[in-house]
Image (cartoon, rainbow, N blue to C red; front, side, top):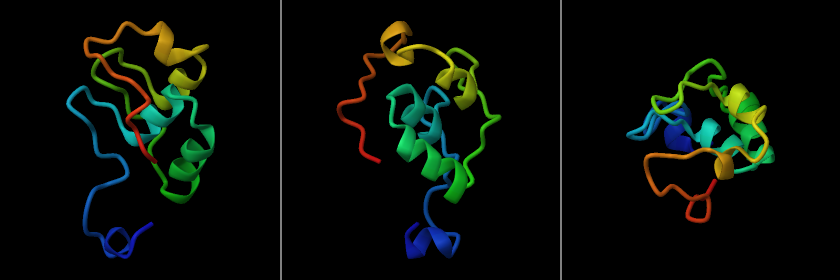
Length: 84
């Protein structure tokens, strides 16, 4: 966590993108489980928020096999450009 985030400045760990995905949801969808664990445990990211596209929680995304490749997103989302 950055000093700015620790001071309450900057983005929230549960900030959403235009389709309602949080960083935790995207980490899980992309198979970045180590990053998801950090977001969940250290960042205290919410596991009960639902995205606006499929109305799933991060936990429900984790239960989907190869969730990103199986989901037909309205956008051309890809995990390749994401950094955690």
